[in-house]
Amino acid sequence: MQRKGKYIYQRKEWPNFRWDNSSLITLLAEVRYLQGLHLGKMGSLGFELKNTAVLETMTLDVLKSTEIEGLVLNIEQVRSSIARSLGLDIVDSVHSNRDVDGVVDMVMDAANRFKDNIKVERLFAWHSSLFPSGRSGFFNINVGKWRSDSKGPMQVVSGPIGKEKIHYQAPSAELIQQEMATFIQWFNQNEENDHFIKAGIAHLWFVTIHPFDDGNGRIARALTEMLLARADGMPQRYYSMSAQISLERNQYYNQLEKSQKGNLDITDWLVWFLTCLKNALVASDHILSRILFKHHFWNKNATIIFNDRQVLMLNKLLDGFHGKLTTSKWAIISKCSPDTALRDIQKLIDYKIIQKADKGGRSTHYKLVDTFTTQK
Image 1 (cartoon, rainbow, N blue to C red):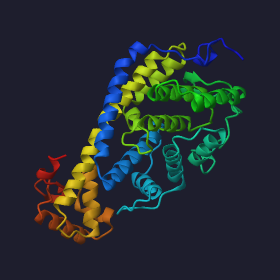
Image 2: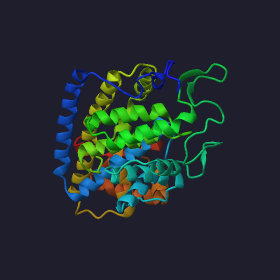
Image 3: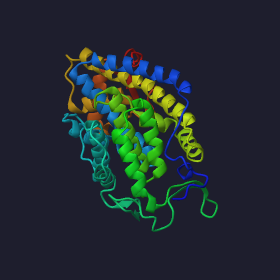
């Protein structure tokens, strides 16, 4: 096995990672403190609110994990697929495509069976669920099996054709079986490391091996979430590492490239990973605040009789409606006539729940009244 070259897996000591604990101790303390606060807050919520929080967090996690790879899924389909997996009834449930259900199946399996060992067959099943058609975009790929490199070495590149920049080249396909056997044994048996540290190592290690034709990032993040669930001691996810990685996408790829071209001292990678995790825990407070606000909104207005269209559109406003809500958008989304939409809206204006956002005319759009929006 070749051990000379510019990539981390070519070094003689691979995969014996090392790091400076003194550089991580403060970050680890901050992460554990935020984790404790977070779990305490969630523990004080009722069953219904916990389910809502899980639904919102997992929806965000699936959406952002795929967006990191440049793929955009339909949010309503993702949310509906997760709700069905959780056994929850939601008002605006829609049919979801196979590719959406496949990603959700992988995420749910990683969450619900977070204590179980990783096996080759389980990873192959995850990969198959990500690519139900056997294709990635326009290309046929090896699904549910390790990559073969039949079309050349696995490389991460950028730039136009003819001027590509090679950021990383993964180990050759002939090494994958042994590399993954070593990784899986470590993942299943090593309990010496802090779960947060182990999650960071697993993430870097898996994407460095890059065992599949496609989907490596999404599977790496599922493995990361498994280890974070072990750190929390429960399958429910109330914060999204993938959402935070998506926000820090450029730093993520830069740090990966730097680490994969470095030595076995991965202190810098773990500092970045733990900082990202800390930011994810902080961001979860915004999700929880929105869920609580939504809960208080419906409690406050429990005596008002809303029709299904009004419930649907109010939930969209409470979740953060993208763009401007006009009468025509109301009609399209709630599948009614413009006249019916206007009557729905006027009723909510009479209740002082929504208001016009401008002086009117063709550009008239609506928003929640200030007394509601300022409570978020």
